[in-house]
Image (cartoon, rainbow, N blue to C red; front, side, top):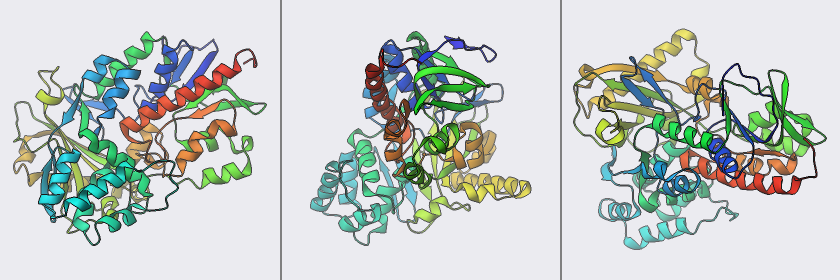
Length: 480
């Protein structure tokens, strides 16, 4: 059932899911498939969260937001928890490129190819390279290792800033990892990607989310968009539902797909938790944000093939701080060739999306005038960077515009426009939320590990299972 914006909800539910990111949608789909009465609420006018898109020029141009590359594991997750049709539309990006002052490399982003490149181009011994990959494969989330990413690289590749750049830069773009973050945040994500390469969804994000929406409705999930939750209702130490426009919608369990800090501090309230728990919540750090430049070609215009994912930089060495600098020197180009990425649309045009990681505060502090100047500067620098590959690109573009962390914050409601949720400590808070307030669960982009498309979807699976277990213990014991 799809509620219209003015429709009033008059029934109770087993589960209410707040937010329709991939974690929220996946959890809702699983629970709906299992026969639970599920209500999915979304503040935006479409589902998907950060997995989203927009159109320009009477829908002649469609742009997927940010970088959308994920590990091969997404195929299995979608096949098992969504549909075979969705899983069959996931394809590998076979041409990932790195172009910077330290090296120029083309790869399919598989372990085998990375091993070859590290040995042949970076002149590392096979023993060291294989030892590094073995170490990553043996990393376990439950290990209590205090090693940082920086220490991990120094252990295997001392003094090799170029190697660190090759190994670390794509993961920084993928989930905001830095050299100071725990090595486990790198090891698990990198190992996932390195199993069989990096993948994307053929057909575009709009097609993917459309198919997911159809699947949700088929499984009797009720959906209401353009609906913002006032608060999560708590009574007698237990989540009882949500308040919409002053009205209580009851549920046996509530799953928030919003930011973990916003969920606890704003939607619930500190008075419902212990001081110790709230102190830990307040110490959770938000992850970095991102900015994009979207470019669409004129009708009939073509460009030479430059790869599908191109990590570029003009900075002389790998410097994580420079990846977040307002005066950006590094960016990643995602190139959407219509015949490969949108074969269902014969009129589709080439779209190029430049993505950079950045600090929210650098943009927030600007005056309106300076904000527009910085956006113009970002666009100009992006065009200069793209001209290195396509010298006449300016003459070929019909659409060019930019989005900043403030744009991300506006449309996703992520505090400070966080693209990857929280740092590592957020995961413990999220996973144990129901132990601190009965009936309240959380799934979303937390702890870096549970970030990106696959991480978010799989976290939705984990929390759906936790809710299923909780509901099985509540049958006949509590009235909602």
